[in-house]
Amino acid sequence: MSILDWSVLTITLLGIIVYGIVRSRGSRSMDDYLLAGHSLPWYHVGLSVMATQASAITFLSAPGQGFADGMRFVQFYFGLPLAMVVLAVTFVPIFHKLKIFTAYEFLEDRFDIRVRTLTASLFLLQRGLSTGLSIYAPAIILSTILGWNIYWTNLLMGGMVLLYTVTGGTKAISYTHLQQMAIVTFAMGLAGYLTVKLLPEGVGFVDALHVAGKAGRMNLIDLKFDPNSRYNLWSGLIGGFFLQLSYFGTDQSQVGRYLTGETIGQSRLGLLMNGLLKVPMQFLILLVGVLVFVFYQFNPSPTFFNKQETELLKKSSYASAYQLAEIKHQNLATQRQRAVLDMQVALKADDEAGQDAAASILRETDDAMKAVKADVADLIKKNNPAADTNDVNYVFLRFVLDYLPHGLIGLLIAVIFSASMGSIASAYNSLASTTVVDVYKRLVKKEGSDRHYLQASRWATIGWGIFCIIVAQFANQLGSMIEAVNILGSLFYGVILGVFVVAFYVKSVGGRATFLAAILGEVLVIVSWYLDLTAFLWLNAIGCLLVVGIAWVLQKTVYR
Image 1 (cartoon, rainbow, N blue to C red):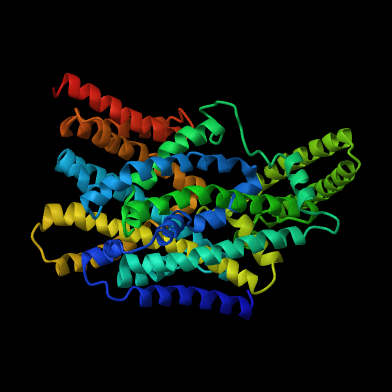
Image 2: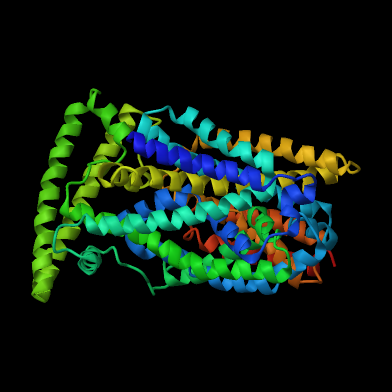
C-alpha cells in the first residue's frame, strides 16, 4: 500500500474511534453504559443492528463466496424480513415493557434461575467463539499486506476495538456504527463500479452478467427442496427464518442494540429498516464478488490468492512443484480467456449454440483450475501445516491490492476494519452485559451499587476481549469465515430460540421440562451436525422444534 492508502486508512479509523468516544461521554450508570439510556432514534437502532451483523467477514469473505460459488448464498437471508416483522410485533414490546438489560432476565421470571443461566451460558459460548472469528477476519488483512505474524495481528485488532468499547460503552458503539455504515455503503458501491470499469473495452455491466450467468455464477434462486443443499429457497426461507429470529430475537449482541431505542416504536422501525435493507445490501456485496470473477475471466488470475503463503512456497523445497502448477494454471487461464471472448462474440450475434459451446469450455476450465488450486493448497499445507488454505477469504483483498487505485485501496481496507470494529464492539458489549446481569449480579454479588456493576461491566468487557483474541488464534483452520460463523451460530441459535418460544407461547410448560429439553435439544443438534445429517441452516429449525416438542412431552408425562 502507498502512503496515501495508509493515510486514508489511519484517518478513517482514528476518526471513527475518536468520534464514538467523544459522542458517548457521560456514561455514568449501567443503563447508560449497556443500553445508552434508552435514548436512540430508529435510524440509530437500524444502522447499529445492521453494523453489528455486517462484520469484516461480510466484506472480506462474502465477495470471495460470490467469486467461488455465485449468488446463491443470498438465499441465506430470505427469511430475514419475515423474522423482523415477527420480532417487531412480539419480542420488542415484551422486552421494552419488562425494562430489562438482557433478554435472559425474562427467562427467570417465566421459568427459574437454571433456565436463565443455561440459556445465557449457551449465548456466551456461541458469541465468544463467533467474535474470535470476527477478530481473525480483519487480522488476515494486516497479515497479508505487511507479512505480520497472524497471532500478533489478532492481538492488535482485538485490542484496538476493546479500547473504545471499554471507554464508551453502547453509546460509543452506536455512534461509530453510523459512520461505519456510511463508509461501507459508499466504498463497496464504488468498488463494484470500478470493477466494471476495469473490464475490457466493449464489455459492460450487462455483458458481465451474461458471462457470469453462463459460468454458473448467477444462481440466485434454487427451487429444489433438498435438505442436504446448503443454499436454496426453502433452506433460506425456513432455516434462515429460524436462524434470523433467534439471532435478532435472543442474541444479546442484537437485543442490546434495539433495546437502546427511545420507544417501542423506534425499536420496531429500526428492526424493519434492517429487514428492508439487509437483503439488497448482501446481494450487492455478493455481486461485487461475481464481477471480480468476470474480471478474472478476461485477465490473468493468481493460482492462489493468499500471496503470503505462495511467496513462502516459492522459497521452499516444493518450489518446483508449485512452478508446474502455475504453468498449468496459466495454460488454463489462456484457454478460459479464449472461451470468454468467443462467448462475447456469440452473445452479440445471438448465437445460442456458440454460447453453449463457450459456456461448456468455461465450466470445464473452471473445474480444472479448481483442481490445480487444490493441488497448490496441498503443497502449502505440507510446507506450512498452520497455513490458511481456504482461498475464499483472500480473493477480494488480493483484487483490491492488485488492481484498484491508491486511496481507494486504503478506503476499502478501512471499510473492512470498520465493519469488524462495529461487530466486535457490539459482541464485547453483549458478552459483558450478559456476564454481569445474568451471572455475576444474579449468582455472585446480588447487592451491589450501580457504580460497582458499571466497573464490573468494564472488567467483564476486558475479560471477554482476551478470550475472543485467544479464540482468533485458532480460526485459520475453519475455512470460509462467512460460512464458519453461520455454522457455529446454527449449532446454538435453534435451541436458544426454542427456549424463548416455550416461554412466550407454551404457557403450560414449566422450568424443569424446559431446562432438560434445552440440554437434550443441544446434544441432538450437535450430533446431527457431526453426522452431517442435513445442511446447517436446517439445524436452526430442528433445534427450536426439538426444544418445544421435548419440553411439551416432558411436562405432560414426567413433570405434570
